[in-house]
Length: 390
Image (cartoon, rainbow, N blue to C red; front, side, top):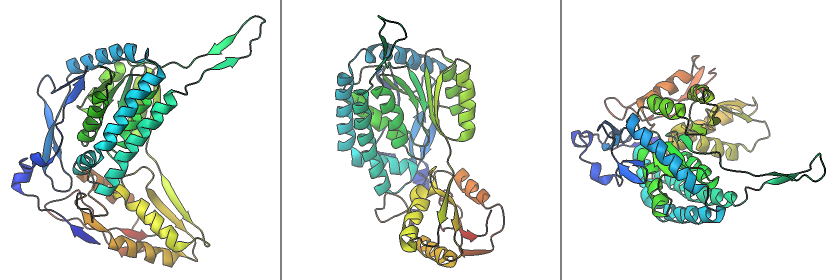
């Protein structure tokens, strides 16, 4: 496994590389891009170089109140527009996302770390998904229900539920965000979105596309801040009627409890668990090519990333050897390097989580795991392929 890592210099840590980051991180409230009203912020770090990219403003309760009021105002306008009118704006936004794909992908890689090719595909998905949701909005069909009594016609209409509050995870900064935004807009709802503070620029760049496409003021609002404080404050408000989260199971349980206090509808996309079963008659080369690609995609930070492998004893040794040899050939480094196949992990806490997965000592290890000292602590430099782990 080869590594291509930029040195983390004092200049980078001081933020002198900020001019390379092609986005300004701001809140979007009632159609206006702004900083938090009390000036509080946090630093956005490039996980590959430890470069300070930008500052992320935190919304105060007053800012959140303005976003809530704006979402209600935006909803009252957006819901009255026809599905065709909403489609036209969303379709134009999709075109803008596609036109800016390379720039948004660069933002995504710099703040998330994943390889640029993965980021580019993800941004393309954002454009495609926006078109899909826009089209689905035109097919929100009702139905006629046979009546029990003569002379009665029973009709069912589908209507937007109201303003939505949504929370998106950092592992897919474009696709997680777009499924919140476009899902709400396609249904005729307004939305307050809190993207992850680790990956804010992708969401901001996408929101600018919707704004420039003609989305009415207040329909889309973007806020950042301390996750627990922002989520609890927004969910406690009577204005939102729907909560959507892509995140961990623990956070999902917490938010669903909070949403229950005001009987808000909830949609939760939570953590996954993805074992792989390899049978005796499997095409082993094809299997290995597939599972290795999925295992190391986004440095394994994917809810559907394989978590354990159950391999038939007849192909066990060949599978382990083949997996190890493919893993060792992966090129790891800064995702902006187009030859890199796996970028860094998002933060040191993810390395700690990886260390905790093997709860029993392995019988054998075909490749070892090590971290580079002093810097790039977010980067897993070698693949750990351990046999017999629980």
